[in-house]
Image (cartoon, rainbow, N blue to C red; front, side, top):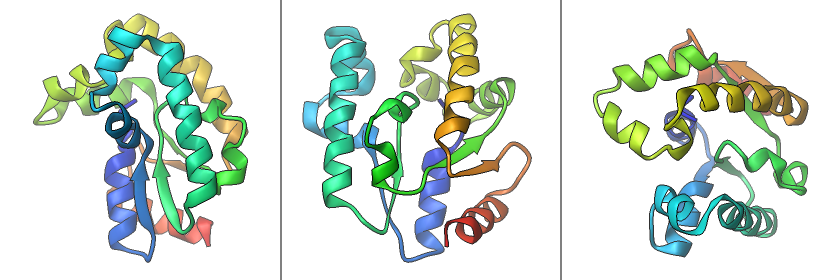
Length: 159
């Protein structure tokens, strides 16, 4: 939802021997359209089915890979078989602040369909945080840390 998972994944790749894959990018490649369009045209259940397809593919085909996932990916039944789950923890207001202050803020909000209604987004965030913490093997608070410290912390805990 804007916690910086792509930025963290790229920094991890730079500082390790891992590869990186983003499931939202995989889905956009499969469908040849943006996530926002999939939600608008096909609906959320269709998108979740695509996430399931990606989860199965990741389990069968990837190793030594950082997999950045969308916010609902934690519901995949096989998530624990794919690898260690790292939860990048940050408060909702901090996430919104970071997205708002980003140079490409409009683009960042536009590509996140669930942020269209901030009250609903906050409610969804509150529900998901509990679930994220349940499935996570590793939790790293990213709210006030620089990227270098986040990467060091994750690499220390993953090894």
